[in-house]
Image (cartoon, rainbow, N blue to C red):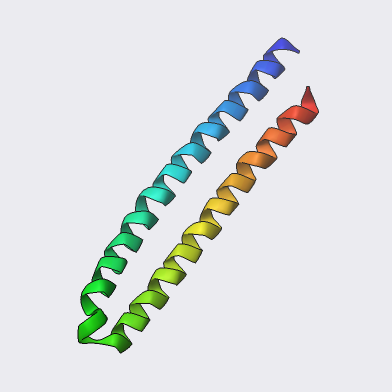
Length: 88
């Protein structure tokens, strides 16, 4: 029984580390991309307003994709937490 409990704890710990790594990677990729697109949109604002509108749409879509990925990963972490609580 003790070995099984240790295995469950190790699995939960491994899952938390994996989710933390995935969250870090998601944020590390999405936020700089949004920043770069916003900087480009600022430069384009006076030169080409139509292109700026497209860039703003791209920013919105990138932010939405990043948010969806974070919600998915956080949901996975929350589910792991609930499962662990139910076992104890």
